Image (tube, rainbow, N blue to C red):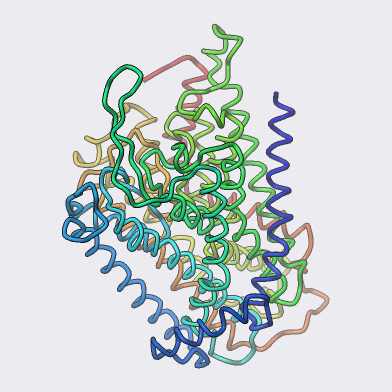
Length: 568
């Protein structure tokens, strides 16, 4: 059993890499304006969009202009989604006559989907109309993913350009990401999901009679199209409350596998695109190697923790020691561990099992993956620019060790870049810890906790990690639908998203102004396996120094108590 599950997990990684490599080369061609097979169809549409929106896509922006336009665009998206939710009771495509969303939940949801977090303080089928799901949530799934790619492209230009303050055009990056990458992949994946049984309709909910004679309401809706972009865009918001454990979202073992592939496909592909765009594929391979090392370590720990389960239960139930509580039975422990590791490393809140029911150690890994910055492949665009922030910090540390000004791709990493990189790491970390601390010292924060002791602390810490890290998954033993949590986590999502984007764009603008420095005898090469190991080590050390005290009070002490047979 273990051998078969290990082979399945290894096959999954292999399929992701095999598909990501050509996708990455294709994306590099798209963003450098090289010809692609979709150009004859999409170039006229692209020009029409620019004309209708009065946009000059050839006019380049400096980093401040790029950041300002990005923030204004996201601000309009936030307001539009907020209003759609408030007014949904008056809008069409609402066959169940669902009322407008409660304002604090609407604020939380608007912040969530606009920031690519997709944290949900509501049940989808009982709260959101079809119009809200399609014109609100699904649209933001596309736009938030495209914004992440745009920021990454700006940073890549900062690394590759010399003596200029221009880092590209936001509208060009956004439009190309949507037309050439996200929409075509989502259309193809929607067709595949619908062919497997994922529903796609706008009919009223069905009332049926069960075998016991009771009446049951079966929710309907355009699920397949939203599931496609929630996976490909590393968004994660479920059309239904049960998310990807729901058979209408994830109907077959084949959809389980390929939804998992979709989560990491574009983030992994962007690593290949990065190597192509900077002119050194080995730079991409090094980053990919660090990602795979962290991913394999996290997956191994999670799988082992869930496979061997609670030793106290195993002592009296030798035939089934595996921790099956909270697992969707079609997926079992292997796919549940794989899903949890992939989604929390990839900034996707999608779940096919209950993280709250994982063993303490099994739940620690997904939580830590979020706290590290979700750079283990990470969100679409966001994962790689987050990883590059750690690359700059690693280069700086190595430069101190060898006594030289640190360099990366011929650009000197100086005080401004280091300060911005530190801000990009500290802002979401501080948001997570301060939010959790506020919750556990206030009545409004502790009253919704449904479990006592260290597990209750883990639930709170996971909630703010998910918000500040823009993940969206949850330890669902916490009632996060209260005004305290909807407002505080909503603010955490906004700070966690833009508190990283703005420093990253500042780094891009600074690097673009610099000349390229020729490699010298003291230059530390960043395209080697040694650097991949150093990069992974720096990520773990920074994460451990930041979050170990909080983790020690939550999942770590709970794991030790479980081993000793103590409960709370």
